[in-house]
Image (cartoon, rainbow, N blue to C red; front, side, top):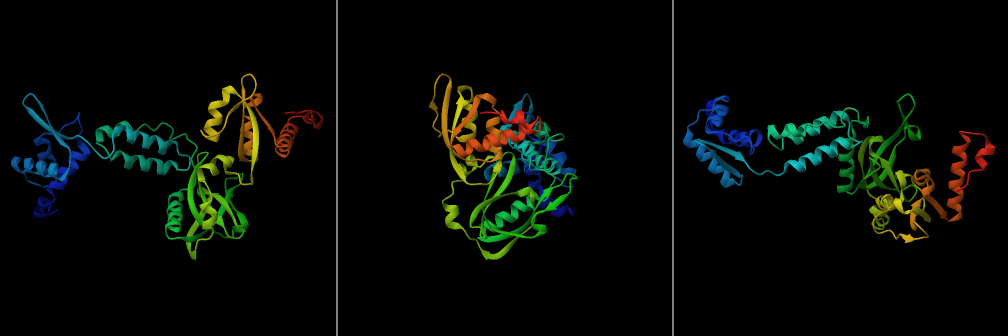
Length: 339
């Protein structure tokens, strides 16, 4: 780098040093700044460094001076993100199932640069990065970008959709054919990322796992289904659709042991009506899609939870229990299963 050009960039390197190498426990002396600049072929006088610090302060940087004995030091006291906030971001990235291992490490590396290198080491927690079950679809980030483009540009998108086979290969639905839908929102449910869209061919709102979508592109066609999506409450939708299994919602009456109050509130929301029902129990009426995932949620509580009605949902639950019981015994034993 030419010396004249380097001199023009001096204050930028001073800014870089404060952002990357200083914090309250690690102030920088004028000698530290001088050495850093000289490593970049920038000659400097002490007075100009004091002037640079004042310029950065005037620009809005919270640079404070510390005085211990005869030594003076300067550090960047406040940043856009505090350390607890960065730890929260790192933990969110680590726990996100839809972010691959490779992208997890890359994102954490970028988050570390939002604080000093010293405090950045505190973010290298790597709690569940290595052994966490993560998506295998590295293109999910580009998928999200493409979906947002369709939403912001009010255009439909097309894509292909796949499942994994037992040999871990992709099997595309519709014989590899294209899906064309109108995207409206992205939602996170049961550790997976979903696109909520209007399907013109069926006239209904559908959802698709983003990590199972490939070859996404926008279509030169305006979105359909605006009225249908306007009537959709995404928060209610997420509570109704267990595991994002589609279907028509129905009002189901359920009876729970009082010990499950927290679990019911977590799943069905704080606004759900919980009516006392006998000693140590309460009932709840809520709209849900009576899918196998819903039945699994109820069954997971064992005898502490019970479906009371309607009769069609109760019959479906019993049918599911018979089918599962049949896997572990003969038909006669499975017929004895009751609610």
